[in-house]
Length: 338
Image (cartoon, rainbow, N blue to C red):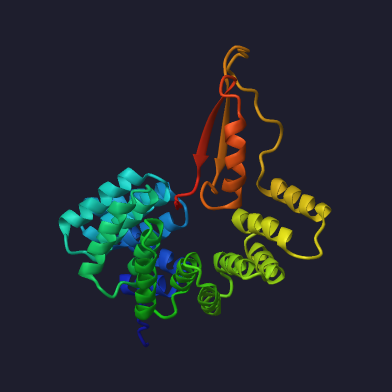
């Protein structure tokens, strides 16, 4: 009688499935390993990653913390930090990233993750420093070059931003996000044809990329091609119906295209409100009516710079009766100019 050898899947088999994107099979093997060896740190860590990335943060975080308790490895802290960041627990995520850096100061991924946390917090100078440290440790790090380019663009260094995106593409030519980010930087510099080409390359690598489609629509509109822009915005919305920015871009661009009437503008605005607006009536303000108190009026705009809204508003603000009205202006745009 021949003996049949039964092969038991190992952690290496699970990692192979994990890297191949076959997460269900990887999870199955990790769980079978933990049923026999509950204190296998790698199985706890890798299963925790899968569970957390699926949005089951409670179980995922518990597994990651258990792995750290078994073996204090820097990569375990990074995974915990990413799970915490995805939940919006940014300060806790930062603590996890710093723990990884304390264990291995020359770990470029730790500096990169710290940069994403600072970026999410809006602490752009610190994000730039963290990304620069990651690149110093790992010069061929395309994702970090691209992230650094976004930061440089936000801080008002357009030439450096373009150079960073081009460097990301040099290290990873098939990087659609970097091509799209390059397009944004080029568009802000007025290089519209080059920007269009960058967005087109991004879409060649990733046709189902709604952000690149919306960005392409913006540059087509800026080139005076609103009908083509509208097609791009609608394609973006077909891919991602909850893409409010693309829908807003569509509403604006219809005003520049022929063949659209006031009824079309209203229908698009109502469609936007149905998808993204607040239902019902606004709640009454709790403050008591005081006729003798000056009325506070707030203007909110992303166009308080050399823009038609800014030009028109210049005539509006001075004619308020300041004895009766107190005026506030809130800019929701970081852009500044003369």
